[in-house]
Length: 379
Image (cartoon, rainbow, N blue to C red; front, side, top):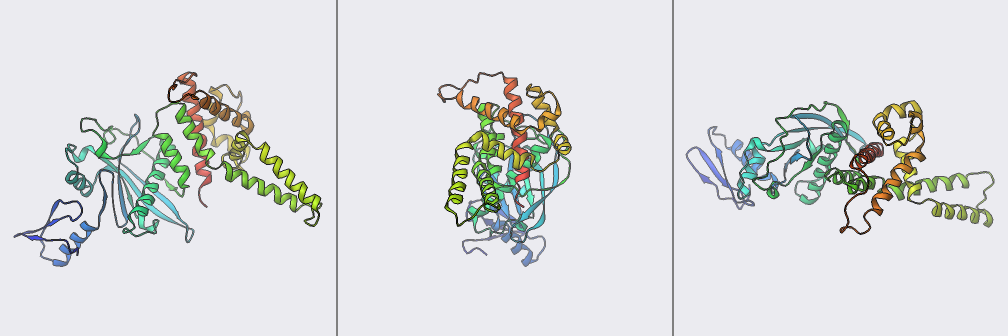
């Protein structure tokens, strides 16, 4: 038990003042079992609380969420699977989106001034069995918080790309009391309860999460494009190594011949000069968007992307969508247009293309970013 505590004994309860947050909590003694009372007090003191944002304890984390934009949602339970890198096994994790827990609400209510929300006003993302994935002690507060926040953003990604329901993590202490939170609970749109694998890459999830919180604009397009840019150099290096290995393993190459080594160096040097951002975009699409998917499956899996492509008048038939160079040129040229339109940013922020066209391009790059995140997952 914490040595800083000075419990106050009543006739039917024990009053404890939280040593870190300075509020009192009463523990009833209706059942005269000292061990149970002590355990309840210890559980209360072990709760880690980030003021206005999240609460976590052994095997559990809870984050305040709100809708990022206008859409519908119902209380939702999903089953997830996270990859545990140490033994390469999959571990089940449950998450739930619904009304804030009593414990979390109590901490918020007791620690925030001018807090006027009711428990029914607040919605949280609850994650269960986190200890099966996060191999960190609760005492390692900073690293543990980063890990569970990444887990929360991974779930937000999974919910959004499957249902178009866009959530965001919020800090209630920065929300004005007269500013209504968007109504999540009273609207209804069911997220299918599927088993998913959320072993996503941290950097890609962070870029995606930042993009979905932005208003529709050329900046949001560029933010989604950063998912691709994040792995430009990695994919380019992988391709270069693969090319170099093929040359070295060829029948004509001899490591004892200077001319062969010089020829290899010249080829790699030429690759370095030729593979600009446009070409790196194509390489990323080739490796993590299309991959080795056969044509029929590729067209079926990317039905929504193909429809957007057609609305932009970039293709006439489905078969044209197999041309990755055409897709590369489409998204890269629009990226260049977004960048060039803002050379004097922040003084110039108006975009020259129509809002309808911008919306289509954002939808296109978002779909591509999602597919890359899914295909890039840690194996």
